[in-house]
Image 1 (cartoon, rainbow, N blue to C red):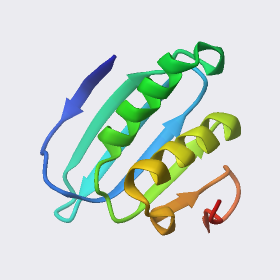
Image 2 (image 1 turned 120 degrees about the horizontal axis):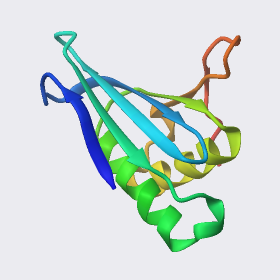
Image 3 (image 1 turned 45 degrees about the vertical axis):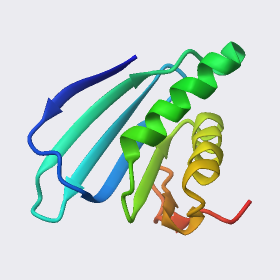
Amino acid sequence: MTEATRTRHAAVPAAAVVWVDRAHAVTIHVDADGRVSIVSTALPGASAGDEENLALLQVVEAIGDAPRVILLGDPETRTALEREYVAIWHRPERLVEMNLGQKPVPVPAR
């Protein structure tokens, strides 16, 4: 399900930016040297149950241990991804939500 569309370097990321909608997620890492890697993951949709959970797990794995994670996109899918990320990493303070046209805000603890 996960397809690396472009990778220039695979260092520990300084930040990750994730765009999600109901059909896919695009994860972009930028390391401390400014190098970029991009991973695209297909999402089966909320009605897919276990398949969606597996796909979100793959997105969390693509995010990795980034110290800052900026989340963009569909609010419902973004919330599901936030929950999966916190369940795995237990680090909600790393998440930053952005709605287009707004300033970034930390994700409230759930």
